[in-house]
Length: 134
Image 1 (cartoon, helix red, strand yellow):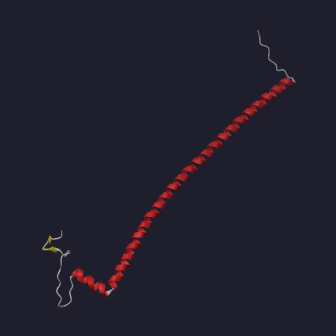
Image 2 (cartoon, rainbow, N blue to C red):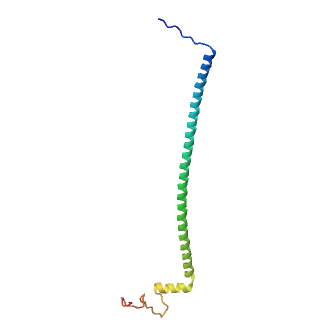
Image 3 (spheres, rainbow, N blue to C red):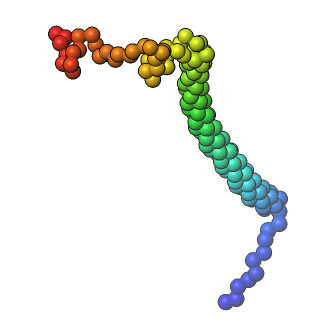
């Protein structure tokens, strides 16, 4: 038995069905393309969002570090200013003749001619190394 060739019926119904099938295939391809585009766009947006978050976190950490550096620099500046103020007072005192004379006499036991210097204990009640305070 030999097979007879299959022929296609060419009428309006089969043409409409073939056209509908072709349209369905095109619609399916369009949906796949749109889904793929949407997935790629979503992935790109997600990547941009994640990169933005990472950058924001990095900037925040850098700001915290900079703020800590500023605070420590302000503390050092405050200490230096107070030290400068104390040194200025000391310079002013050293420029004062009366203070300078008193300092040299007390620290280095410098005396005027004919003057005798006695060192007394720090406490008035201390005699001979014994403390007599109650």
